[in-house]
Image 1 (tube, rainbow, N blue to C red):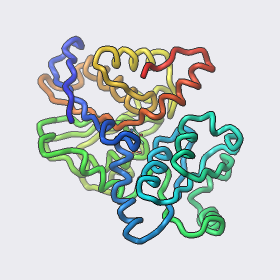
Image 2 (cartoon, rainbow, N blue to C red):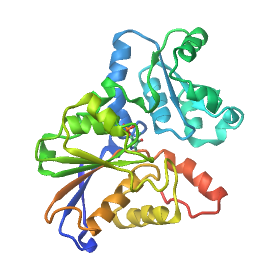
Image 3 (cartoon, rainbow, N blue to C red):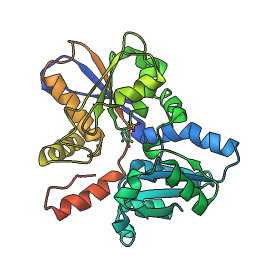
Image 4 (cartoon, rainbow, N blue to C red):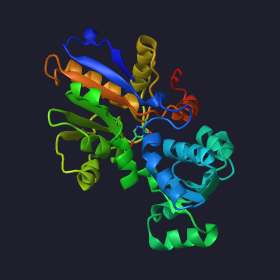
Length: 297
Ligand SMILES: *Cc1c(COP(=O)(O)O)cnc(C)c1O
């Protein structure tokens, strides 16, 4: 579903719609459902019983994989960055949810986590947990990219610009693969750097896209009062909740570019709401500790 957003107050004649991928599924939201669709099908087809993946304490991917595993009667193992979380993970909304979905959580130090892609680490995991299908951190692999080529529909060819947040680059790769020639994608990086272009070029020869990290607010998971105020005003004005790690920064960036006259007059812009709302509760706990304003959900 694409929802029109009235941006006439920004003083530039463009049309903005939001694709509500966040409403795809009650617990496996947005792009994580797209990314897991073919992975799960692959695992079930090979009659494997278990999936293992990696993530941080607030990871949307961990939450989504845990829920998807439960729905498909697959065991799931989450290797979580931060051994200090082992005793207190039930206080973390994301990890508590993952546990409730039946995910087995393994906490490792940051140093160990940095080695997660090495054969030795994988071997030790297999020794401990037997057979599993390994899904990389963030869920990006060829099957995930294929799932993301299904985000845009034939009706979406009316939009000249497709704007979306990018983390590992998998979602962007799928979207760019599915673009028509007259369309351009803009990836708003959720972290410092625009390295996602290497992921995109691995999966498609299309080059009608650009990536900016100008709206990452200092880095992955970083927020400031301006961003929080923007998210809360957006919710009040349009009735759509945004998350602070990805979609809040995306919409903030799109509004800023509209105000600056980046888009041609009468351009049609489609922003992808890739979900991630499960992360708001965890962010609010952090904001509360720092005595900062909270995100209204
Ligand atoms: C994971 C995530 C992204 C980033 O997706 P990538 O495929 O890793 O680039 C964007 N938005 C939300 C809400 C996410 O949870």
